[in-house]
Image 1 (tube, one colour):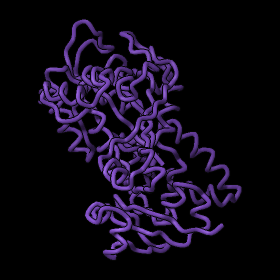
Image 2 (cartoon, one colour):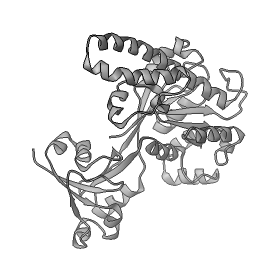
Image 3 (cartoon, helix red, strand yellow):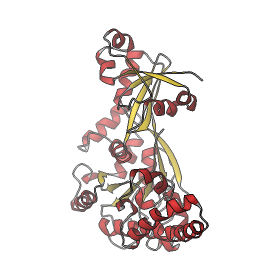
Amino acid sequence: MGFNCGIVGLPNVGKSTLFNALTATAAAEAANYPFCTIEPNTGRVSVPDDRLDKIAAIAGSAKIIPTQLEFVDIAGLVRGASKGEGLGNQFLGHVRSTDAIIHVLRCFEDDDITHVEGSVDPLRDLTTIETELLLADMESLERRVASLEKKAKSNDLESKALLPIAQKVLIALQEGKPAKSVDIAKDDLPLYEQLQMITSKPILYVCNVSEQEAATGNHLTQKVFDYAKSEGAAAVVISAAIESEVANLESLEDQKEYLESLGLKETGLKRIIREGYKLLDLLTFFTVGPKEARAWTVYKGAKAPQAAGAIHSDFERGFICAETIAYEDYITCNGESGAKTAGKLRQEGRDYLVKDGDIFHFRFNV
């Protein structure tokens, strides 16, 4: 399991440049005019994890397979998108199908790159996009509630269960509050998720700055960080231009040298992935052997059978137990044999909660 992030923002804020850099492809056309991305481009990137390389070295794995992260480059939204302005309705539908939103905000001045609003103001841009997302949710839910009311009168049990939740969310939207602000009982979450509210999705604000300000940020990024903090959200500073340069460097040594020359320790991709994992409450577990070392992703709170199911549905259906070694124990004991000798290999059952870095070998019977 990976996760899917939709990259949104106004036209000409650096979305497609960032997408190209992150996926190291030219799949999205980064052009200096609105709507250059007509269809959403999807790209998969490997999630960097030093732990995977270390366990592979110990096991002598012939192949290393990292877990994957998916980005969807969604064309620039504009004011009025919820009413169909620009190519709004089409793009809002693409946003609805993603797990999380990466909201790219222009925090750099450049007279050569036009701004659709005529000036650079990331908080204004942020409000424009989030207002359109909220209006899109409200209009969608108004139609849904009307349909649910009709079905509920016909004694449709599912509609009767979903209607009060939908009405509660609709009231919040009509008050200008996002769906995520509504307190939903744990037992009602499966029903709530059926509503597919865009404003229920976690958001990561990405401040796109010039190369010179990538290490320090600027007064505009500080405004975004202050806003994100007030909303309980996260923000990162990146330079799409730098990410593009790094993507074109072939060796890791060249990349590291280039980043260090700019006062940076890591790429923006790593920061985005790290914050993305926090957003979605994800964790990584590993499988390792002579053929391959592989990273897998599950949600926090997943139990051992669910982790097995991330590999193959048969593993979950026929789950017997999970032979488990903590990452630190695997490294300290120099592999599975040493961990077994030291008593660090455990057999965990169906109720075991997966921990980040667990190394599993699943026993199953189908």
